[in-house]
Amino acid sequence: EVQLVESGGGLIQPGGSLRLSCAASGFTVSSNCMSWVRQAPGKGLEWVSLIYSGGSTYYADSVKGRFTISRDNSKNTLYLQMNSLTAEDTAVYYCARVSALWFTPEYWGQGTLVTVSS
Amino acid sequence: QSALTQPASVSGSPGQSITISCTGTSSDVGGYNYVSWYQQHPGKAPKLMIYEVSNRPSGVSNRFSGSKSGNTASLTISGLQAEDEADYYCSSYTSSAYVFGTGTKVTVL
Image 1 (cartoon, each protein chain N blue to C red):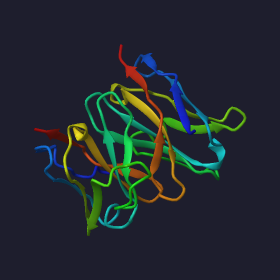
Image 2 (cartoon, rainbow over the protein chains, first blue to last red):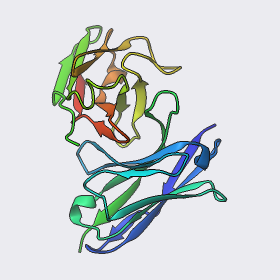
Image 3 (tube, rainbow over the protein chains, first blue to last red):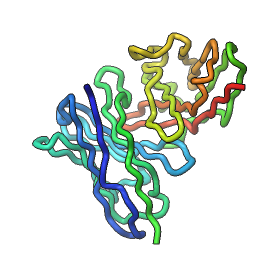
């Protein structure tokens, strides 16, 4: 069974850094395309980043240069390193496995809340 | 990477059919057949309901159907049920990125 469990969220001051983790089970992270999607409180979904199985990474313009997606094959875990955080980054962050056949985020974790506030 | 445009809300009575539109551009919805639809209940993660414009994952009711014409995709829910009340988001693949719709709140009257 595919499972994704995010962690690492919390309250952080503006300008600070945070690293989110997404522990996967039931499949191999490094063999799949993985993505991060966020949702600000009361708002819609916003795609953040993705990493292909080959290692290529892509980012939304809103986070480019500040966020870094990566994975640890030995831990079967996906990460999102977030730097220079602002209030606009406050959101629930979801990790998702992207279907190789359907080119769409298929399995989602339950999300972890990041709150950027002083 | 502008969000796809959806109506803010759509409502219908039990048993009725409703349709949600999703308008993008030739760079996303119109350029790819990788349009998906997600259902999200409050406090829950999104659930994939439709992929590749009109296909349903295993386990999704056949009351949900999708289509596309030009730069606009649509999700139709037939035989509306109380459990269908939720937020719905469209999504399109676009050149190593994804763009989501603005979201539509479906209310069952």
